[in-house]
Length: 633
Image (cartoon, rainbow, N blue to C red; front, side, top):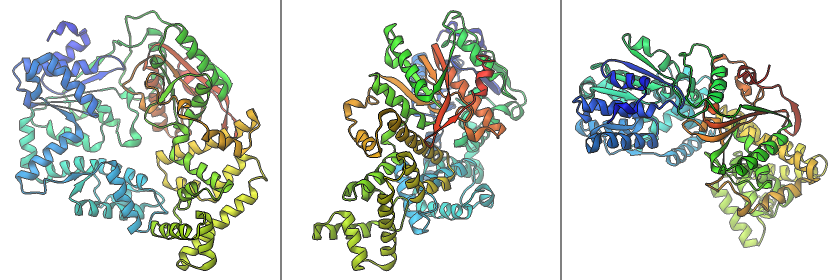
């Protein structure tokens, strides 16, 4: 290990070994280097590797940390406990449950297992029409992250929403079924570790004694459970070092609490604070824009990023008349950058909402720009888009068995798998289409009366829509189907971030229907057939060498030579839900800051004066963040 590899700020943070340490690491300032060199320095000073604990949030980050520590320390570095929070909790729970004759051989339910179990829970409670499995799991995970178990007295006040009573029942039965399966989900690992530490103090003391030094990466992203685990473990030796950046706290919606890093000095009165401000990623012009923006944040640790890379292009703001003009302008500039020697894979386009990807996908295909969508699928591959397309294709062609089966029970209508199997059998025996078999079941009263009534309602809806499809513009008809089917109401009731994203995607689908009609004269049928004709070779989002399309929430930790941040308008970025909430607006600013600090050489910000909302043009004001960056007056 050569400490000369560190700059003065990093060196101070690495050499302060004992006592509480807060390292405020600005974007691109080398925080991983500080953590790994700090571990190596501890080992060099005689600390046994196994008495060092370093926790982070992703397996990728943990693996990278392990690799760097081994490079610095040799194989001796393998003894350090480096893992994610969940992996650490799992290791301790298994070890201690085995020693104390508790059920240690429990199964970890992954996301698919959790969803399937939740489906059973909702079916048993007859709440399938009230909340979707993923939404219920989201609320339960947030509760567990706040150390609220299913028997807690605080549970009713915690679930303050339209269906809080139902959520409590769901949570209780979900946990009961997990226990019956001798299983835990990810949230249980952290919650149960805290419970174990509280109920068996001797176990907590064992680990307090064992871990002489504790390091935490991305401390601003910790939730309450993680905060308590770290705080308890560090009490004995008080050698705790947390590394993070309050300016990059963007995950409150999934339980992260920015107050954990803000209150570190209060929690650990004698802590040393180090600021990493030298940036190794971006040009000074990019950093100046980032600093101008984030300086408007309230109650933050003061940091001013700087770099020795004083050259670089000016940050440019593009103002466009319409969102499609914005996409075309960005596509044109990307092609120019490629002509200047950039690779497509060195360029990224960021947006606030997944729904914004649709127009870029469309224009990039038209301009033959290869792209990949990170953390998601192509617009027309998304579940809610496939659902509405299936509705529309069923209305146009009721003999389309595939699409009618997809939507007959979406939203839930009480037409279960057993009923569908009976209908399919009748269709096969009578040589009917599935739709004809539905009609037959109603006419002949083949099924139970309640089920027959539900099927009759569905048939009447389809017939009603078939009568209406030619009586109004396509985009209005799509809205009609979304409303009358109950699909939109189903999403609105969920009150989750994911549900809002799905609604935004449906809004964008309506926009696409209208745009295609205005640009190409296509009616709804032609538009749907056009989607079906998009072949694999027309879908460059599978191209790993292409331009990266992603939401701002997913860009943290990444870097690109050229970055385009789009949709800088009030109601888009910042997001409409945040406009009247001070804390949420602060997080939107931090989200924009994170996007800006991903750029190495070129940064382009853009907005459009008008954008479609449910197929109609809406005028948007430029984002307040543009004024804060001093790119507009």
